[in-house]
Length: 332
Image (cartoon, rainbow, N blue to C red; front, side, top):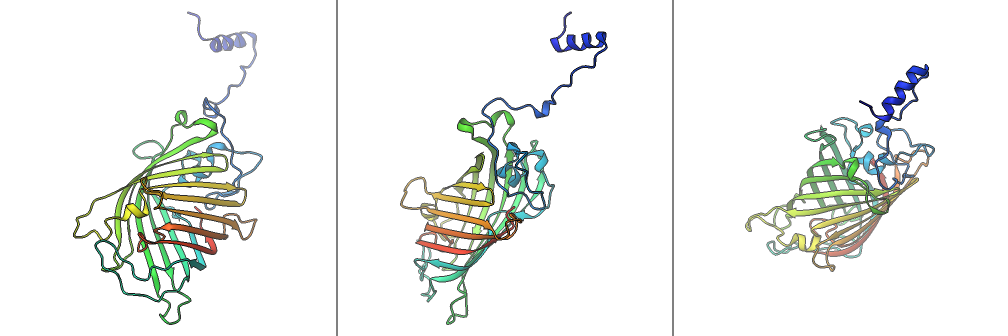
């Protein structure tokens, strides 16, 4: 029986005394479809070397490094890294202050004399607890985020914290199979995720606010650009314990975030939507740049602008605009 052409060529080479021609490794062969666009971002994972512009690796872009999607990006379990932006903003100005928060099931809180100027900070960490389970490449993460508004410039009220939000969550992230990654116009589908989260402000009645949700998300990227999306499903509570039954009608049912990471710069635009009424939801824009250009993953200048509902959980049904300036750290 006549074999494959490659087998016959090897046989002829042996008869002629020639060494067979080297073959390309299967792992390095490109997946059919549009060519991937390499990223120019200098952001890398914690303790990893800076990327080389002479050797771009399209399959290990920012999303891949962030969620450790490729085998070369895996860093094992219980390695604590950044999640949501970690920042300290000594100056944060709000156009309006919610001086008497209320909801359909909670009476108006006591009047306050809070100032428009305050400090805002956020600490957010995550760690992988299970790797490559149950599907190859699938990882289970747990995370915790705390955001605080601090009336540090208020002398009369002994510098109180105006609001503190706490959010623990668990996220399962599954990288997209190579054969399914390619999308039109050079975009690539990088991952799908499912998560469960709790968020509360830790207050007692009548200021208590909280909600539980599950969400389904995905991420796509093209060179320096990436887009992530999440659809939230709030978990039902009894009417006797629900402190904010109309929360998703103001804060939103979905989140879409466009990210840009070019050289030392990073920027993002977050849109929270109710999927029903464009009057509600929120927009948030962020930008950062390294303080020391030879350490792009260290301390960075940070600017954040917000407009809409729900900058804090207490303000879920209160519209305001704000601007903050400070520094960010521990990117991922």
